[in-house]
Image 1 (tube, each protein chain N blue to C red):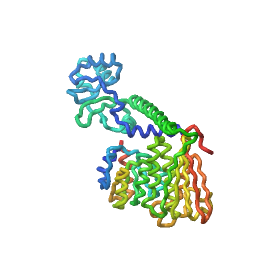
Image 2: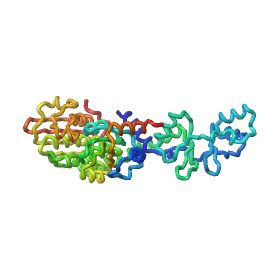
Image 3: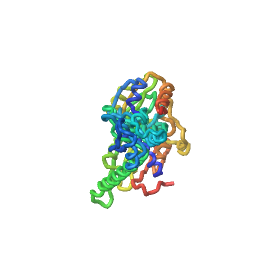
Image 4: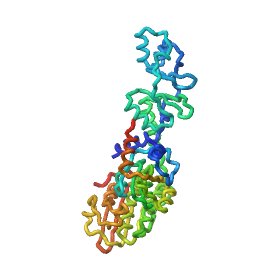
Length: 112
Length: 311
């Protein structure tokens, strides 16, 4: 599944998009604990979180994640946006709560 | 350990690689107006079990050996391909990732898919499970070759330096309580190691361990220093601070144990997994701490995979 398709289907707001939008995502990881993401997310994962501070970009870039979706209509700090551009990490936002997003993503990924 | 990494690489590859990179390109096709009797020779001489049916570049169907047998049994050997082919054909696109192809093979049970150019709608090739396996093996071989060259370059860098012993030292100061800048040291070190030509796996492990060490300094102290010493054999990270110290190191190493205050937890830090993450990434980890004096953490990652991890 490509990040592009996820953005369209979930109607995500693009806060920063790198040229990596056409890349396929390897899975989804959901956590608000950064160390947990570092320990358990896999490269290419799409990450759902409610954290909006600049360190989420550091974690995403460290783990080479496909992008970040901020849940529940959360908006990134200005510093976070700047870092996303610097590190070329796609940063998206959705009005939907985590449960809803997770459910939809799960169905999208299981679709054969 | 090594086997796990290989599997992970294959998983990565099926997401990275496109169908067109592994498909068979020069496909034998028939027109829908061809006779089934012509098909017999084609199937026999080329030893294939199915042929895409193409009219002026566009795929209109697929005719298989089963279709041929049915047609033979019904005594209609002189009918046209159009009357015997299946016209509802599942296809893949040239730019689909391999993972989609693997899924379709799994779900449908078919043995082959015609591959279409999304823009022009024209038939570009055919893909089978065998094509996927061959394509992956070839790519892994190329990757391995590149890794060898890479390894050569990294060691070459040190070979160019004439000395009995060589150590490159990178120093970073970490500011306490400033979460906006936290992560800066590990990201700079990661870029530096990349430029030195270190293997991606090594670089990743060092960067993750350094990140966690950095976050600890930011969270619990007024600042500290991180030093990376790179030799041809190993990367040694030292994270030193004059902070409050850790009263019970054994307890601090327990997964989930944390003394982080509420405001740090609200930021998503302080989950009590930092030291465990460091240990997972390090070949050697030494942690010394004196209450009210400070903490000194040493992490070693060996550059040569053949040196076994310390028990």
